[in-house]
Image 1 (tube, rainbow, N blue to C red):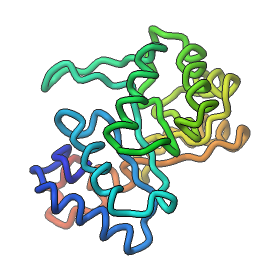
Image 2: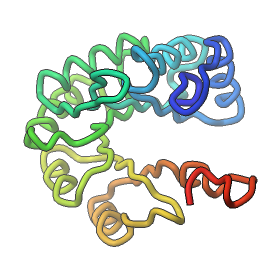
Image 3: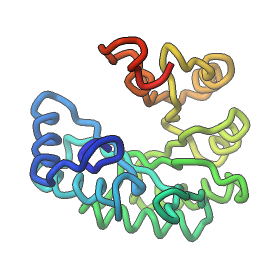
Length: 204
C-alpha cells in the first residue's frame, strides 16, 4: 500500500520497485496487494513490474478483490460470480502472472450468499488461476459456510494488543478448521510505533 499513496504521499515508481526488490533481498518473499490499493489499480501494476525483476517461483503472491471504489470517498462491496472472475482475470493481467498464490475476498458482500462467491473461487482454483483462497474480515458463520464449499487457507483480520476481538471466536474457529490468521495493523495503525508525545499519537 505504501508505495502507491494509501497512507502517505505517492512514491516514484522506480523507488517503489526498488523497495520491493530490496525487501526480497532481505528474505521477504510474501507480497500482499489488492486491486483497490492506489488509484486505478496502481499497487497491483507496481507489484507486477517488480515481479518481472524477481524469480516468480520464490514469491508468494497475495491479492484481493471485492471492494469497488465509486469515487474518492465511496466504496461498495461486490461478491457476485461475474465480478469474482472478471477481477481475477484483471489482476492476473496487471500482475503479469499466470496464477495468484492466495486470493482473498477483501470484504464480504452480504447481498450475495458466500456459497456463490466461493463456488466461483473454487472454479478458479480448479483451473489453477489461483492456488489458495482467503477471506478478510469475515464473521464466524461466514467462515464456516465458506470453508464448507472449499477450504479456506488464510483469514486476514485486524489484530494487535489494542484490537483483540478475534480471540473470543475467530481464533478458535481457525484452529479447528486449520485456517492461518494473517493479522493486519499489528502495531495498531502506528499507535505502538509512535514516538512523539502522547497528545500527538495517531489516535488515543
